Image 1 (cartoon, rainbow, N blue to C red):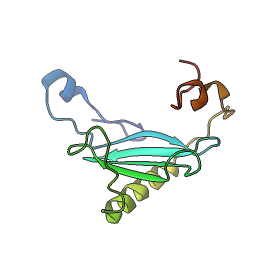
Image 2 (image 1 turned 120 degrees about the vertical axis):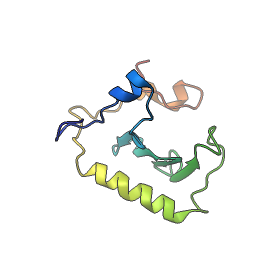
Image 3 (image 1 turned 45 degrees about the vertical axis):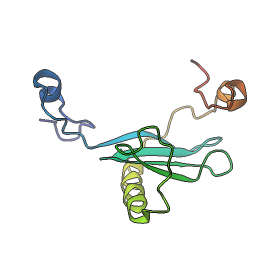
Image 4 (image 1 turned 135 degrees about the vertical axis):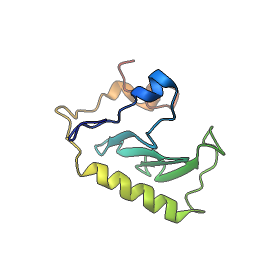
Length: 122
């Protein structure tokens, strides 16, 4: 059982006994700072990716079961799913602790990695 105030889920039975995971949502990132603001959350089969439309794509939603390679953006087909995912992401933002150093590492720019963002240090 997870203790109150702990940001996590008890996964012991999943790891030790092969039980189904109690986790049904996962926040990949919340980065609301330039040059590349954006956030990613997955709940169940649906994954929402947000970003700066001038740098990345503004909103992208995929069904991970039907489209594990994330080739099809279904955001326009399912606006209610997009809204639900955005609402949950905003709930996480309420507890967001700002980084100590939010200086972007320009070594991670896509121009240095064949058009792909990198942290710049790996």
